[in-house]
Image (cartoon, rainbow, N blue to C red; front, side, top):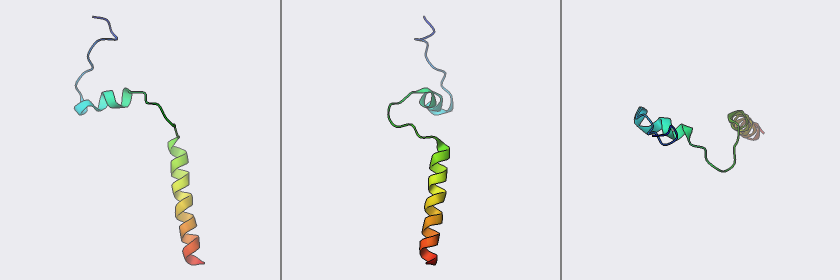
Length: 50
């Protein structure tokens, strides 16, 4: 049996295979999401103060 066809170890209820899968679509860095969320919170605070 080749290494590519070997079954994955059953650990953490399949989370190991979930994080190893490569998916298509938009890839956004987590830092950008965090900065966007902080910016949205700051904008809503400024709007409420005004």
